Length: 397
Image (cartoon, rainbow, N blue to C red):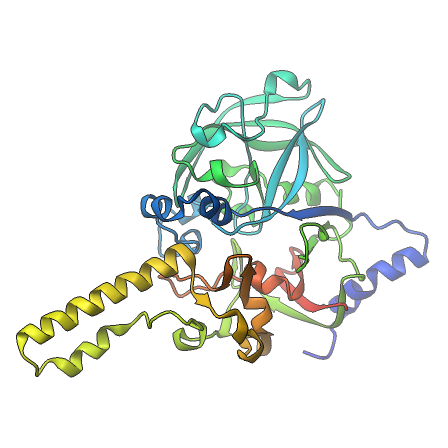
């Protein structure tokens, strides 16, 4: 892993070589902003528990390969998505906040045709106000964890940073059942995964950039700032040496769908449950009391059923609580990926807010880890379409 291949060397020195020879690299920086998550918004309104009962939280459902229709489910109810950027669609431009999502492939924004409650407080696209809009007869229908969205597909000019794509297909939402999108801080989603999971066969935004030669390299990269609401950057077509330092770790994809990799070793339940809450698997203890009288056993079973239910509610609604004073003494959580250890310190996986501290690990029913911002804030991440790899390198100081 310490030895660079030719491809690694070319990638690493591309920026310096291009500038030295007077060649302007075709890569573009898009500034990202850390907004309020849906979880925070719901907690502030005091309706998180009620909302989650109506809309069960399962952030990994869209990645479950056992579901036959998973390719048609690129959206999910991500309560903790917070990073978004500004794009424009149409002529003159209409502006939207979007999440740049490596777990989906479609570009989608609300439209003026959407009368759902979820659209009522967001920017909506008006095709009649754009001189470059081109309608199609195609429809789009996407299922996600809290309901569904449906609408139409159209073409228009999409501008992201200084990139101008004059003929990009995108979805215009007409119906969004459920309330989830009403509480998020962004308007739509710009998917950056592979075209194989694109709903209705729509060409993803980054695939259009590659096909038209609008980027020098077939890759994009993320720097997610740990501090403040500003400072995060998405770079299309290259990597920014200002943000990384040290050896580059190349990780091959296990599937050309999502940016999916194989984790050889991940924290087990005991290592991940760094909580001061009651243990969430108490039913084993019941076995020790089988010999007792039925009445005693009844109350024991009842107690642990209640305890289990409380643990379930805490894990779903509030994540696992952590004593903020213990962060300095808590261990690293280590993932082994492609024979390389990636260690997360407690300062990374414990979320600190004005109301206290909680674990950044969310429960899942699947053998799957979603390495989201808790993980990615520790690394400069590069998504290489040319070689079908994810690249991780240490952040510069």
